[in-house]
Image 1 (spheres, protein in one colour):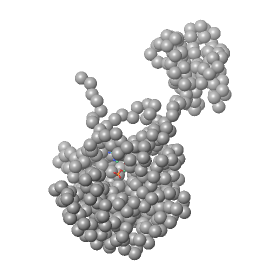
Image 2 (cartoon, helix red, strand yellow):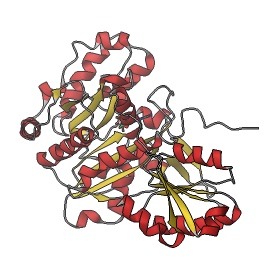
Image 3 (cartoon, helix red, strand yellow):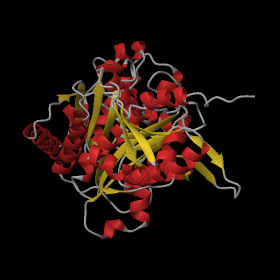
Image 4 (cartoon, protein in one colour):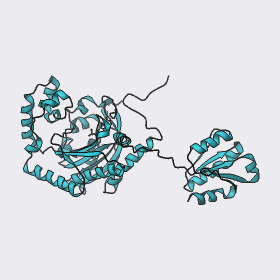
Length: 418
Ligand code: AMP
């Protein structure tokens, strides 16, 4: 019997897996330079953290969570997103009592039981950032700029930024009521009608054409913002422009999670088909209170690693990433292997990238492996070389070969490579 990765999951395999690493590195580097500290939280949390934090009425909580009962009878859930766990950790460690904002970044796996398709997986990977405990338009703008810089550093040119404001607890209720009234007059199926009553903003996010067609005249949140929210949003937009980050206003942009307030944004890439969002986030001033903490206005984002790699592929950025290897060692026989093995270790400790032929292959197979490895030099040791106390060093780009005394080969190769 053989096994396959579960539906909606896949393996990152070399050499393509190098790009997943490069994306994690590329998206997190701007955060580290901006004072964000690294946080790692558990892959599973109390189920109630998500149902309260993300929201009962969201698709994520109502349909997509991997929930299980532990042997101790506790209901646990594989994290469908990162923010709730980070906020839980901030509160648990009392960081809100220290200097604010608390700026954190993370990278890891997330799990949603979604309809699997290209770019939409049940196990996916994100780099995320959260700035907790400050209400300052410069903080919203900082995070958006850092995400844009991350994509740009990876060479991506086709990432578009959409922004919107969802208002606050002062102005949202009136907008919600106006939207509800509009939506109640539409021809909608039963589940959508129920959604109108529980979470009408989410209906704006409905992707079905028959629903979309009816939404054209829906009231827009931007027409209902209070003075403070309007001013805040203007400030964020001004700071983005000042930092040279292009954006488009999208008054219909809502996000699938309940905790968002004020600034929301999404990064899209047009080379990805239906699943075009490569990242998104926003301000979530109410989350801390929803999970039992004090008022802690915060802002954050999560960028999809898998989709960012797909976007890079769509832009032709995934050329061969040559495996960087300095030396490939070829022992011909058991005694040669015994002699060459410590040399390989020594070269690696000296900082060189070194691999060797394993499995006792003949000279032909081993040299083929050396060529395929992409190494600059081969270090070949046969019985005759051992007798002569030497090793053959072959430059694989020119095919020049010279005998070097065994005792000197480490220094000679170090000199050649440096
Ligand atoms: P969200 O928390 O849904 O806003 O997700 C943030 C980002 O994570 C999205 O913009 C995607 O790039 C990525 N993402 C979310 N869900 C998935 C998924 N099921 N498969 C792959 N990437 C995802």
